[in-house]
Length: 186
Image (cartoon, rainbow, N blue to C red; front, top):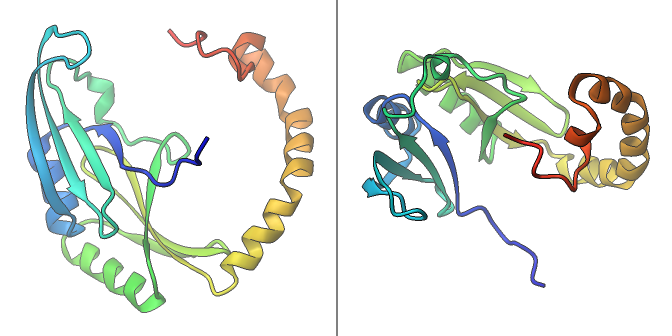
């Protein structure tokens, strides 16, 4: 089977399509690729009412959002923890990274960093939906660092699993961490 080769789109919930357009198009400069008003669920054919808006990145991939007031809940308005979700967009140079940070801050969005992660350098902000957005650039040693990390992955993962699995089982139960059990989620 041929290896999957790139992300066509990442799709997320948004609180408001207009605010989302402001951030992703006017602040970050992504091209608006389309806004589809959906009135029938494509899978079930049941009536529904939501907007699916797409923004195109410079490499032809998309970031999409669902604006669905019918399923919107108060808890959706809170910032998401970056471990639960964040998206990292890439620039090529530190000058570009710093120029983006200046531009974003001038638009009134708090943009923190840059943070040196050794293999990348990143700036961070939240979009109007509480999603953590990262703009990153590869360090000159990126490929060597990643190759070194890849060579150690099996050992590090084995040690991590032995260390962390008991706590996960205590919190979630065995069925939640069986990677072959996708029926766990309700």
